[in-house]
Length: 377
Figure 1 (spheres, one colour):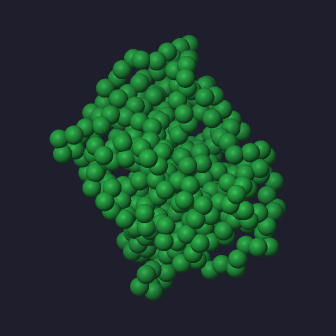
Figure 2 (cartoon, rainbow, N blue to C red):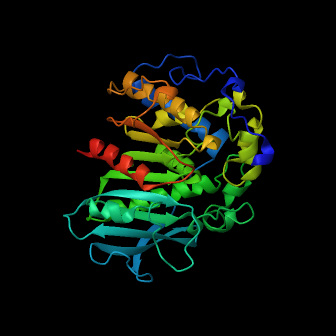
């Protein structure tokens, strides 16, 4: 990364003109919920699909859920551990992903659910939880169910092996398309399959559901929540370039860097905008807008300039206009980025920046819980 000479100087951020969420491709001014939901939102979603993330196929022939017992429960006194194999079949082939779910013993179901898209390497000792990164113990203490799946069980986070999961097995036609599904889309697909399981489990309140991802997992979280309206809250943590941050700022990680370093994450079409972010038909504030009228919360770290915290906050400021101007929700981000001191925790949209480096910490989770409480009360 150091060899890419990233820009960390605000004075060198180019003057930018962002695409307007409130003007359709045909030039129509969008000012009503009907026009947003029938015209502009589908347009924006399709632009992201075609130019940035690629497809998330929704068709399959069968899905089944099987509980297995392979791991030791780290919280036997306070939680039930369910290890669930989710098997999806299509065109005579099947693929199985693993979901790890904790249900509190000390509260009454159905439980609100926090699902983490986990891209970290599996632990060599077989343990399921990396405390802090996945604050399962504290979530259980507060009466929430929480679950996680490893991206490796769906699409490996590797430029050479990413197709070895659901792409080769279930959706091989996507590998031939310039807007075909890649790793981030595959992880979003997996979050949808986890939601399929939550909906049929009587101990889970799927209407009170939060999807969380850090870094690359945060990018997948945003894309999954934009596509799947069943998630009530989305928490992309330090998702940066191709996630929450405005691409046109060219601050920290850029499209050319991310597409070169991680060619398996985004659709092939995204490469056309390397070094030419200003020609993109969308930018990331429009992805935040796609979550409305459900809730979305961006999180940054001051020591993570690579992810462009200011670009993440501006993206939230601008994207949140859809909440207030289309859905008449009381959402407001009046402060400039430099004035921020405390988390902005309000109905529908929020933001915090903490001290420290690129990571997912208990401090982040604590703000996520506070935000979710407001949405679910």
